[in-house]
Image (cartoon, rainbow, N blue to C red; front, side, top):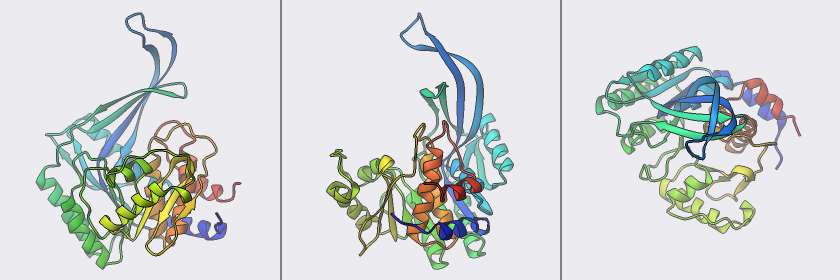
Length: 338
């Protein structure tokens, strides 16, 4: 698959002009790092000798973080955290990254979502989730919708990312009230969906599920037949279902080791092979992809070039342990690497 290095580079260098709003399920990713030297005498499980504990933005907040580290301009955060130490940590890290937090609400009735991962050497042993997944309280959601509509009306946003982890922030109403206003202003809208959570809503610029999510949304069971994407009739069928039901301008399906597949009406499928050299951890890779893809479109790239940029970004983060990000310089350098 060919691409123009100079064109991708020029696009990435203009990311700083892009103004992005991200709305979705905010999380805190917690990593407990250590080593295993023996098995517990109490049960056949490893004993982890803890060396350190780290925190980073997760979920929709990781999308925001990726948009900033890749050179994005103003990044507006929209979502809900709890009135707890983890919520305070999310606010602190948003501030540290220069992400605008005016649209982040603290709700005393909820816990801040925490995903805690136990890491021994390069290996993740266990993940523990602390979360409340009931729908976000109506007043918070109304205020968030109103704030986003105000940004749209004032011409202060170039793209909106909807990041759905099925934890209560996004709903059909949120999309249905924001998408028409955004489309009327020519604003890019992208959705990273959660299967079974939202019914189809029309008006998106791009929908970006991974393969498992795409099949789940289409009500199909994926059976790996070892086929290349071009010859995978199951994949083509699922893509057509999603294009018919959701009617996005573009559908991008992440295919793990097979890269990405871009689907457009009245066009052949475009397959973009993976750029990953080694895969250590896929945690947060989808967040990086949606951030890079949206930044590319907001900067004026066509969908194929934006998908190439996202593919390069994904190839970098999966080579790292933990929820990682990509810097603008790393991304640009990767365009020239074989």
